[in-house]
Length: 467
Image 1 (tube, rainbow, N blue to C red):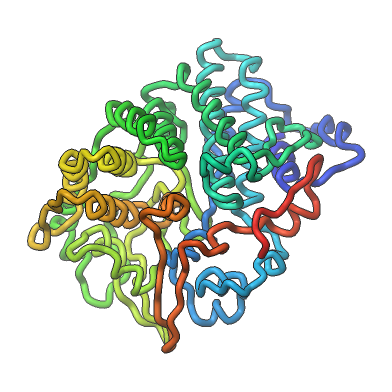
Image 2 (cartoon, rainbow, N blue to C red; image 1 turned 45 degrees about the vertical axis):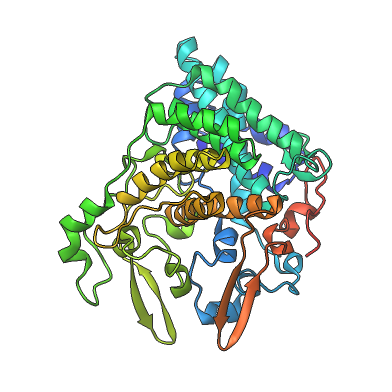
């Protein structure tokens, strides 16, 4: 029956309907069983590969992922994102399924199933039921945050109550109604899911895949930051760091393994700190299916955005030329927490909140504490300034590099561009032509896939961008 329920999740995400849906769901295959026990439902939380969060389009837009010239020629949608083609009709190009949308809603369906049934599941105490129920609430809220921050405009208090976000689906029933709610309604829903979950979350979860209390505080802080509520973001950042405040020492890792890392023309490293139990993890979730176990390569221009002596770059990527393409190739394998949440993000949220409150020295103390664990001592210097803009830009730079290949740099850029004070744009030169991703470009909001709009299930979907 597990496969049946996976299929239900996928069908719900696709918005397909069947006249004989009730008969289909009640048709239990021979030798299988319907989920009844808490362990049956909790297994969906452990289904790490089918609940991952794909942010491929965001990584392409930011040029955080290298795309070969051949691929750009053959894939027009990739080319539109990567080369910042504002004339491209991305809606017309999205003719196939898109994991960022369908995969995220498949996860939502699974979490809805848990939320609907965990409190009546058998072979468990009420406390055990509540823990799994609460963990599914955090996971569902995170999925809605991801899909909202990709397919809808970023949160702006003045317009959030009138602009549409994405479909809100709160039932695992394949015929469940959905409504494309406003951005404000979606954020209110996300915040409420976190609030309801908090009292029941354990300080130490069953596995690294299960949200714990510190992870929920950290996610709360992320959501409030996206809403420009720095007071609440700081409050929950402090609560998260009280649960886990570890920073991994990349300087020590490099010094121990530099004889392996620095071998010329070697593009694999046999040692890696990256895994489910990486010390900075609150809880772990996979990102793009294209990066399971290994990071994507990054453009030369993207590597240049790292500070001189940054050992996160030196330990993870190496310059390589293959045919006509030159890029930084991923040399470090392991399990990267691209869709979960980590301490370094929370430290940098706290630093931004303090800087916003003109507590510049406190903000820089946090920023420099992070940087000291990353920068080669011969290259390291404290960032010291009394200027708020300089301090914030240093925080943003470090955060973008720390959280490369996650949704956070993309979400941050949209937030800053909407604010209009610390705008984020990109420029590059390719084949003698200068390309620019403008801070006010419509490319910052991704269109829904055609299939989602044409087959919205029991609801309707309106595109949030013209092309």
